[in-house]
Image (cartoon, rainbow, N blue to C red):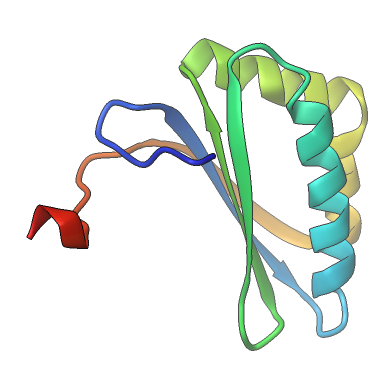
Length: 107
């Protein structure tokens, strides 16, 4: 389950831009890649988001720390899953840390 708290994890956010009709195939592919990533110690979660206009997919994946995030990337790369992303559209990946959160319970 995703945990979104300051200091809780390292988050990889990857925004994919896809041609119309390619959104669902990319979501299916990324779901399979998440199952492979889950094999890596320190992996926490993956959440996939689709844009309502059908042109973007956002992958929000969490790892316990930077080392775990790098192990996940290496593991996916060794299985050819990072290279396979290119068949679906353009990716803009980045590693992030949570710097602020606010939810209804905090009000």
